[in-house]
Amino acid sequence: MKAKKSKKSGGNLNLAAFFLAAIFFLILFSFLVKFFMVFNQSKVNGKSPVNILVQGQENAVLAISPTEKKLSVILIKEDIDRKSISNLLGISIDANIKSESIIPSKGIKEEISDILLDYREIKTDLNFFDRVRIFVFVKSLSQDSIQEDTISVTSSKEEIDTAILPLVSDKSIQDEGKSVEVVNASGIDGAGSNLARTVTNMGGNVILVSTSQDVSQESFIGYKGEKSYTVDRFSDVFNFEAKEYTGNSIADVIIVVGKNFGEGL
View (tube, rainbow, N blue to C red):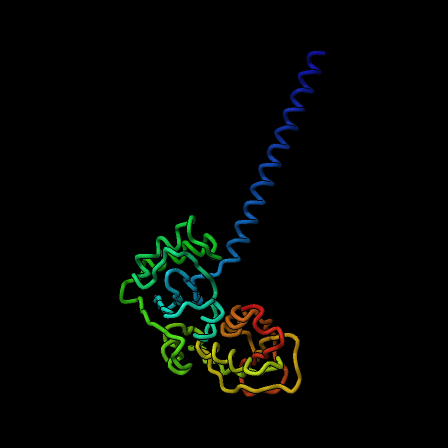
């Protein structure tokens, strides 16, 4: 009888060990899944430019260009909201940082530790991987690689675009040199021109802006031949589906602006 009890006890221990191991691996698997999900949701990939709006005692946009190894700080004189800043500069805003303790004009390199590593006062949609990448990138820059300019709402679009283009343009888009046509099929006056301005400031070669007689519910990016970096970049920034284009156009890339324009910006 004692031998049977001992055998039964050993079996229970093995079963308990099995369940403990199963729970451990389940927790480990869940952690790895969450890790990769957060990693894949990063706004900073170390390759493409990223524009970060910093709202503190002053407003500023940090335009980070990993390929060119430079950081541009665009100070905004007036106190306006995110959408107004995006419209004013003709650029997309990829992420936000908020803290009343931030004063960008004091020197962004000096402020970078507080901006990216202080979890108490800072509010941001950047995740842990974004913060680490930006922190390491900015700390590696020489002072000569950091440019600064100030923009006012009283400046004309032409003045702003002339100042903005060298600060925020994507060199990879410029190097590909794809021609771009923007078709306004949203039924909203000016939607095509507004998007074309952002495309141009990104380094895109806009050769035509037209208006469609037919209204499209959905926006999309059409391309001819193989999908390029330019197409992928526009698709990410505007949150438009990219697909092969079968219509007539002299451009390499055709951006159709539908009624949902602006939902992903």
